[in-house]
Length: 94
Image 1 (cartoon, rainbow, N blue to C red):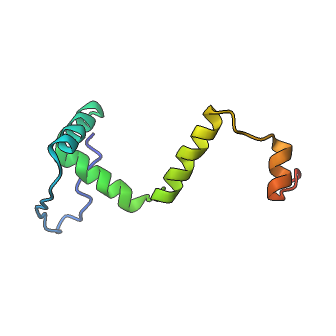
Image 2: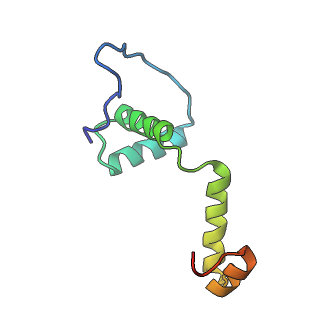
């Protein structure tokens, strides 16, 4: 995945950053970058951090709500379109 560059301008200094993770988490990281076709762990970490910084699509509460909605669907706890319109006050013409 060569598009996962450092994201720096040509004159920006490259620095090394160290952080600690558990061995189990490191194994999960290594499995993930290899399965997704990255060339190295560093490339994967840079790509992931850049993606999280540039495109913060979910915060933790939104992710939890999404998972709860998925569970509701699996358990059959859903409502019809008409019930949703009535509960949330939306008009069918919108």
